[in-house]
Amino acid sequence: MGVLISIDYGSKKTGLATTDIKKLIASALATIQTKDIISYLKKFNERNPIEKFIVGEPKQKDGSPSIIETEISSFINSLSLNFPLISIERYDERYTSKIALDILIKSGAKKKKRKNKNLIDKISATIILQSYLESKNIKS
Image 1 (cartoon, rainbow, N blue to C red):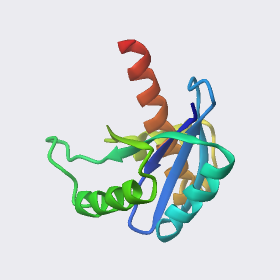
Image 2 (cartoon, helix red, strand yellow):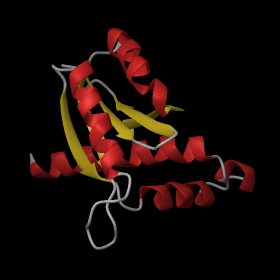
Image 3 (tube, rainbow, N blue to C red):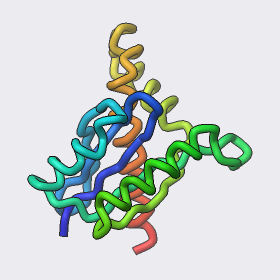
Image 4 (cartoon, rainbow, N blue to C red):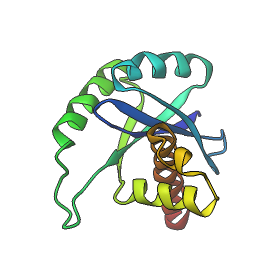
């Protein structure tokens, strides 16, 4: 048994979130340079065993794949090669960046903080993971 990690993949930076060991709550983990993600996850996995990766699946409003999907597919191949024993699941991430920004606005965050893309990426990853957890609890 380990934690779940959600990945809000971006060309330059990627947001990460993790669960508690009981898989009840999602928490923001980090926003890192995308080129460094595999090494970051390897180090994380040494300290906190990872059970599953939840990779955000960006889609257009009509449900068709987003432009970045080819890049994400390549990343998933790399992820599965580097972590062959850890399962990978996709989860719809539509509107998570907008929701993250709305959360910052409602929390009274100053304009400078609302423009912090690193923070938005972490919050987006957390939203993806919390939504995933809630969908699994409903189906259980």
